[in-house]
Length: 319
Image 1: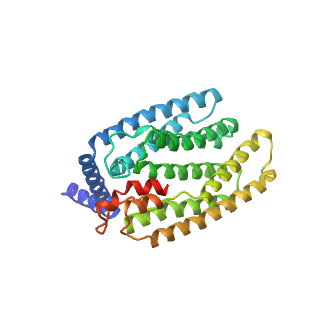
Image 2: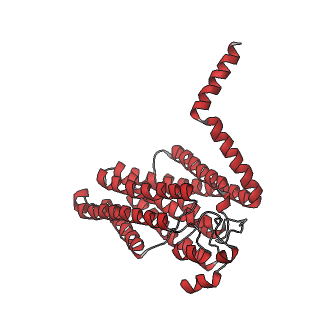
């Protein structure tokens, strides 16, 4: 009797915490996803194991020669980090499809590069936190160049997928947040810079999620200002990482840090403007319209016809 009361109390606590609801949600999402694209889910699982092994090998090869501390915690964090990313992909396997909505059974080279970039972020953070500035700068440049490479590969190999349009900017957000949080933790940037970065990327991430769940779609369109801001942020971050190598004090890079903060604030304003444009965009827009403005994440709405979704020639002319 006592055991039954204890079990009932435990079930009540878990119910208040939403564990049962979350477990049911995950189970249902996984079951539906497996019926949608079983080969794609298997490929995601295989890729998760492969990337975990490669990330662990990279961490060992980097940390042991440098004599860094905390190898086992780094391996554990990296494994959990990649497992979480793999789980999110499995729960949203519907995004593993072409821009026209046809399921894709392989992640493709471009998505593999993006996932590899995300998997190396714990190692990059460890390098910055432990003051291994030369290795951190090399890792930062490699990750930044991989961000350019995956887009080129996706276009040349015709591997553009809905998942890639989501995963790539999400990886960029994680990249910038991890770098600046790590720089802030070791005293290389101030709290104002980190706060501006978190505001910008918080608005971008949670704003896109809110638009997707409330409106069912999000338009993502690269802009010249966004590209220029990305290049300027990259150059400023390289200077922040190179400063300790050259013996520069933080005060000598104060102007660079202020410029980065201003860029983050300007980026946050741009995100708000993009959000407003998404809110005003008509719900029943055709294939040509959403390709012109970016990517539609949801399925066609009730007012959308098959003809409007198949306007491939118009898309090519617009681009």
